[in-house]
Length: 420
Image (cartoon, rainbow, N blue to C red):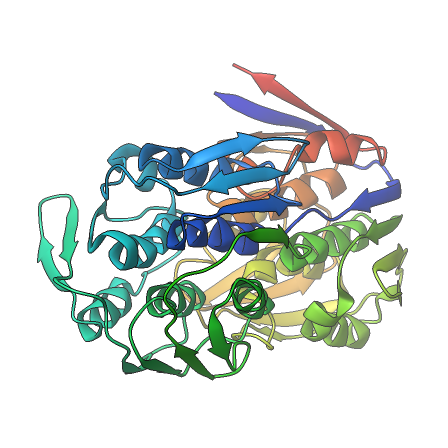
């Protein structure tokens, strides 16, 4: 079991580059099942969630070649099975993305209940209802589901009961090869959805409206070969900006698309954060007069739920009282009990809301990372705390952030990975 040992209180300086977006790369890799042609996918982050999906793809027969760092050549020429490895899929929510393409290519899919972060209820019924609308027969077994389709899938008119990024992308992937037109309503609008659609359109798909609540897909017979450059990870970018502000340090976050984070910039401006936003970079400067602001998460283009935890850590160092309202996942604020052990003044009102009083001094403690985003928030807290912190269960952090300790050390952080 690996853990991080962090000596807090060190000022950071220098530059940290944003990698490719995890939530874009997972979707493009899963989409490779839609064609027997070769795709070259670059700027893929080297993180555990990607490695798990690659294992699942290899398990169903996809040929994968790893070239230069972060570049993969994939080809699903001969799909050998439509069943997932249950052990791997149980650790990866994104495994369900493979289901639609397998149904389109093979007419069947067998998958266990997908895993991932324990942060609240996952609306699994949305996926199942969507598949049923496509004419798929679903049989639940002890571990998961058997899905079958007797003929080519038919286009549908489907309204999502709640906005879900993964469900939106899964239904898009299911519809690309279906016969006729599919209309998806109340779809997620995240940049990763639009990026996936843009690449598929370049390969011959006919998708309109991706990035809006209404997505129209006209089914095609096949897709062509091609190359894909994964967009920058907006969540990683925001995490690094918030980490620099929390540490009171001057750093440069480069390789991002600032247009993907307008909600974050607006809130940080209200908090009097000292930032310089460029075309593809952000300069983070010490902000001694940081003040508390309220936060309410919302689907894109609102404030991302994935940045709520690092923003809450920042608010422990701001002057005043802030209300953090997590509207998407009811289990995503439980990590605040860990921050309280470090000295933060936080009151939990209910599973969706906490009140943060700042600024407070944080102290090093032995911590356990509960999920990806809370994990990076604990790293941020530990870097700013007085004394030594030990963070366990760092596999959760590795699922979303590539070699984070090496990248932070280059900016002066005293952090090391220890294998126990």
